[in-house]
Length: 134
Image (cartoon, rainbow, N blue to C red):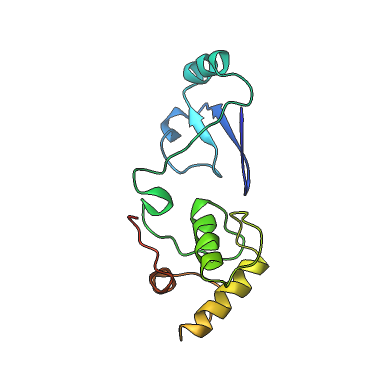
């Protein structure tokens, strides 16, 4: 089964490595016990809306990660949304750290007298007003 999100497509599937379930061992896919995925496949209709909640605190509920060009995810999307609110980001809301987001980050960093770099670090999150537990 597949999940389509703005930054890509990910699978919900079984695994022959059951010890990997619940860990960050893939590139974003959701691994389940084979018996459970077979049952899920029988009862979930095509085009069912799936919501993945990264804990009760949203995209930063497990902490900030240092973002760099090429990164994808809900945290990148949250940065795009914030920089759009602050009138720095004018690109599409993709959840992908591309050239357009990098340019917006550089302008933001320059205006806030932060080190101009290709990464988004804790200092940048703070300056944007983003908090881990919003």
